[in-house]
Image (cartoon, rainbow, N blue to C red; front, side, top):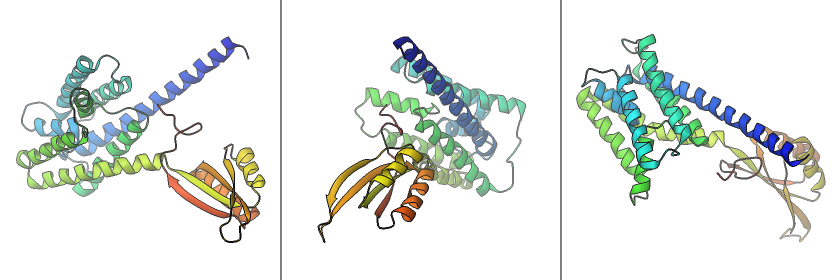
Length: 296
């Protein structure tokens, strides 16, 4: 293959990957829009960044939460361009605009006069789960929903704060406290539960998305196992010689990493064809390298 054909193939592959990324961004943002508009806004749950601020302010000024969210997000995007430059995050800009426009559109197309159900705990669960699941997907591919994340980026650039999450959490906590006075104690407590649970759900979803199985296999004959890994699972492995500490027998240690579905196949193969092998399987959500995640 000549150089021009190779470059053209690389450009096509890159274009397909970019298109797939933006499809994922769009779907994740639509999930967030549904969670915020259907479950968060009608119940006045005020946890979480700009949407939380919008909920509180909508009770104090003659504007809807969607309109306030749109105005605040656009202002923050302007600040982002001013302080961080035009390249501060194309994906974040795309998600932030889509989120703001989507919420404003739903307010006009499908107005809601009250909560969807009469079960506030059930609605709180969806108000937490849908946006948190969406945020986890966005974070996992290097994007965010904008809003207070833009403030975090500005603070990180122009201050010496090592932990940007602490002041942002404090801002969210102040919004939750404000909701106790603007609405009532029940709404404030629900919002506090949402604030505390949101980060746990996001971390859990990200970990499960990237979860892989790390195998350490001690065996006498590595060839059948390695052949199965190469030919059937299309993965690679590292093999090195070792010695048993008790009987000083020569052993081989195979190290490899698999997706969860592949891990089941490899485990079953070893059980059947290499039953004497010693097998250690560890969960890992941070595998960086060819075939898994890149360094960038």
